[in-house]
Length: 166
Image (cartoon, rainbow, N blue to C red; front, top):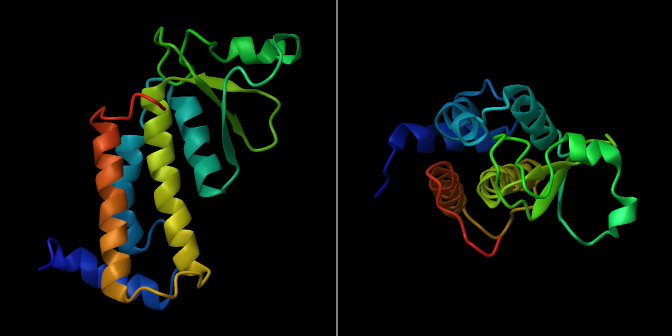
């Protein structure tokens, strides 16, 4: 039984000619309901840059503390820090940092923000795989349910649920 027959039909149409164009009906609905709400942060200019980097597959996330302190650039301090999230501006313990494209700036992010970003990245990775023809072992129903599972992850992330170990 399908929860959303119109989305299923939009997915089937999208799968026949997969595109990353956000205005196609299938992706438009997911952008409106999941991606935009998941990547909305109080620092909206940085949030827009994060979305662009995710769409372009140029965002990197790395744990904080793997590099010796003397190699951390001053610009990283300007973009939050280990105790302040660059996306929310809130004082939080930031165990990860992100880098957008080939910028030399790092932005420290809280576990809450990391989970929101990674849930969107996971969705994009899967639909890129479909677009590139790399998902072969699944039929269209299995692919659709995987998309629904990834949407569920984005929903949980935007509600604030995340794994503490992140």
